[in-house]
Length: 81
Image (spheres, rainbow, N blue to C red):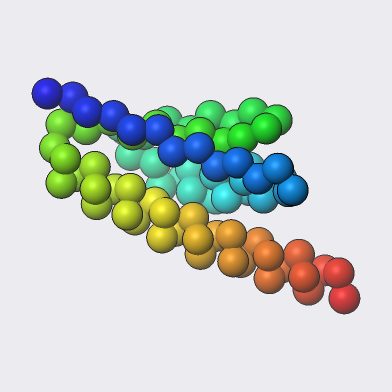
């Protein structure tokens, strides 16, 4: 059985951040992952056969997304100085 999930990164206040986070994660995409970036949001779709693989992948992805967001915010804050 194939299962899939879609994660959407929306950032109405800073749409650039959602794009930057998704682009920073894209090099780590496995063959069962796709990243789409539009003007308003970034969408990552994951397909797998095992729920345990899905949970592990989503957990890793969200942890890395948080780290990417923190780094982007830090760099942008430094640039404002």
